[in-house]
Image 1 (cartoon, rainbow, N blue to C red):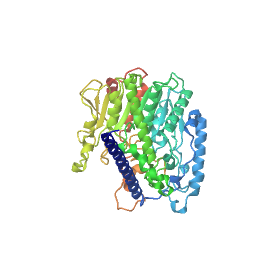
Image 2 (image 1 turned 120 degrees about the vertical axis):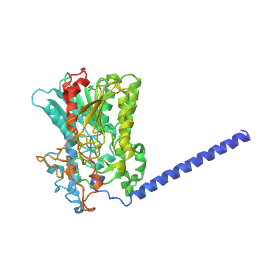
Image 3 (image 1 turned 90 degrees about the vertical axis):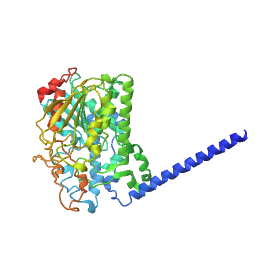
Image 4 (image 1 turned 135 degrees about the vertical axis):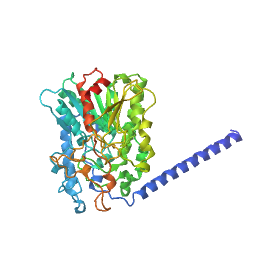
Length: 505
């Protein structure tokens, strides 16, 4: 080896050592910063540290519906014994859903919607729908849509995803593959209950929408997976924030028990009987892995020219969404679809609310940025009030291949009290007892979160008001049901034409 070679080798070794030192230093710095950030935050409670024994992925794959319900019952019994019955006196307060004396305790309510359920129609079923809820959520989030399907003659099957509806600690360990297995189990049960010639709809909300799409992409290659005839996606988790890719790194210090708090991005009061407020970094990581897989599967099936075999997709999305990447609904999903009668319904911000300089430029222009140039292969419907009046709600319908919108007035109103919809609002009507602005008085779930008028002095409420100001109901929910009815009423293989749309206005 000559002198030049030795010199180059020494330089290379030094550079590698330097890179390793820099990398380790940066990683240690990030870990120290993460530990410091969580030092003065809320302490972990019993529901953050105890996780019940859910079925593992292999067990879910082997289970039937009854077996899954039996395992679910055991999980809820474990939560009662190990969390509810062991709460210290300091957290036995009415604002805690895990306190048995609280009006928010799910077992005290008229119905515990945290559990999987099946709704049966009167008479012979016209079809079957599988309802897949979102991350940190429970089957409650799709119960209104499930009841609507039931009233239209469908069997409605809603499955509780593993690590949901019990304690947020479950989200510290769950893997997205368990949710995929649960999805497949629910669809197996759907096909067992309803004849193969009857329609099978999949309705997914947020994470559930990603699972519905993931299943349908897999069904293109696997003849053992019963194909859906229609997909309804609500606030779909097609893309998530980029930071979620590295969420597990931020939680590494949690391997040391004294630093367990670093595994959580949010440790918050649990006052919602059907949804977690606390959030683990692992949950963010699993959301990223699932959404990334969906995008990869879309690309693979596009390259294989198989996307034309997907069922028509009806999608509802708020143009402003702080949970998922709303633009990915267009760029990573609809832009890749063939012309198969799919349609996306976009809910614009409230143009009648004049916030002037308080409205961010990003929110004000999101719709323009989402709307691709040129004609598209799918139908686009934009719901909003571009005239700037609360009563001037219209649907701008752009048919596949067209450039111009057909404007259709709607008998709806954009409430002056809200400036936009939100990720969490779409599946709930204004009359929802928990989230609605005019809650149904025949139901009582301990609190009316959507009806709270948050004007008063600081420090009065036991929760941070930021958790309650996000709109939790959809004033355009009747329109959503109307669009779903079109999918129910249109036989498989028949087009959903623009003329049909006009006839129903």
